[in-house]
Image 1 (cartoon, one colour):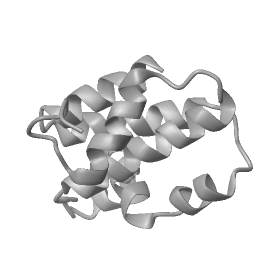
Image 2 (cartoon, one colour):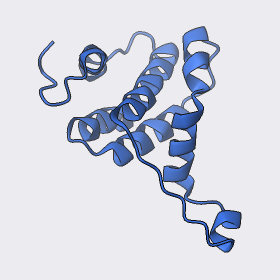
Image 3 (cartoon, rainbow, N blue to C red):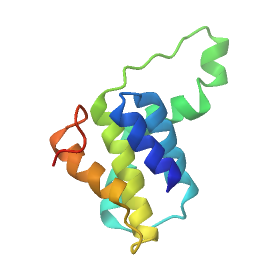
Length: 119
C-alpha cells in the first residue's frame, strides 16, 4: 500500500520513472489474481517494457553489444502502471480501498496532475 501511495505522489510531482518503478514493484509483490480487468492491464506491453527497463536495467546482451536503451515515458504510461497496481491491490484487499487510491483514480480520469485535489 505504501509503495502505491508513494507512486501516486511521484506521479503528482511529474517523477514518472519513480512512480512506474514503485507501482510495478508493488504489483509484483502482491499475490497473483484472477480478475479479468486486471489481466487486460497486465498485458500492456509498453508499460511492461518500461517497468522492466526501470527495475532491471538494460539486458546484458544489449550492454555487451554497445546498444544503449532509451525510452520516453509518457504520463499515460505512468497512469496505467499505477492503475494496474491499484486494481491488483483492490482484488487482493477488496475492503481496504484507501482515500489516496480513490483520489488517484478520479484524478487520473481527467489527467489533473497539476491540481490533483480537484475532482
